[in-house]
Amino acid sequence: MINRKIDAFLFDFDGTAANASTTMVINSTANKTITYPDATTTIVGRDTADQLTNKTITSFTGVNSSTITTPNATGTLALTSDIAADAITGAKIADDTINSEHYASESIDTEHIADLNVTTAKIAADAITGAKIAATTIDVTTKITGAVPVANGGSASTSASAARTALGVAVGSDVQAFDSDNAVTDAQQTFSKAQIGSTYTAALATTSGVLDFDTYQNFIITLANGSNTVAAPTTEASQVGQTGYIIWIQPSSGTAASLSLHGDYETPAAGGLTISTANNDYDICGYVVKADNSVLLGTPLLNFG
Image (tube, rainbow, N blue to C red; front, side, top):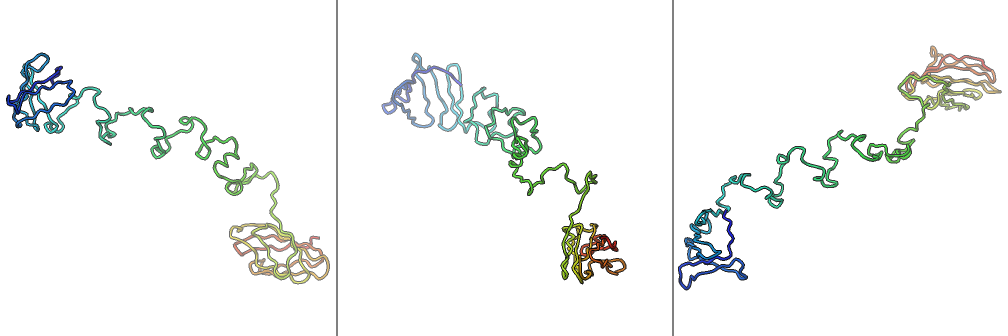
């Protein structure tokens, strides 16, 4: 590279009228055009003050490399086509001379970024999405400032009710209301109060009385005068092992009641149930649900009343 302060050039081709000398002034207000007779013409500068002295541009073809010859230096004008691929090294590039406009789109790869060199200031606001964060990498207790909404796994709600609202959870339909006295089904329990099963108390329909073991545990049945039919029980497989008692009550007056049991009821030696016959007598028998649609009845204890 040759650095010179030049105010004007005087070019003289062959001295003919058609190719008269042309002076190019650096600060001229009008453009100057130099026309070459052919591609091999040599341009010679004129020796004047503040002008080029014996400066010769040789080997100019307009396509290939050209040489500038001065009294004390020679330099080569290189075109883009004259530079070999991968020929410009980092040592030939001045510091701080490559700007963003010199980078091709998507030309910077991960390998060009040194480790630990992306700072907070280099990340645009709202640029990091959940997809860019590895699972289980954020500790909400140390890495998040401020309250985190309950719906996002935090504890920002001021009450249990607000927390349920944030989660869209309703007591009764989605979760059970907390009660420290509630028994659990998968652990042994110690009860400090007596536990009473639900009891069905009613008169038995004389032709189609049904005992609902799915709903009730104990039964107090008032019989009608004459024959009383106990229809098939209501049971489910989930009731297997359920136990309880049945109290049979004779009518307060009139003819004594008798029992006819559906085949789903099993009695000792298949002998049916023998009950008291006096008015207002109470007979008690225990039962066990053996299987779905199978109830074992014990021998009644008679004559309470």
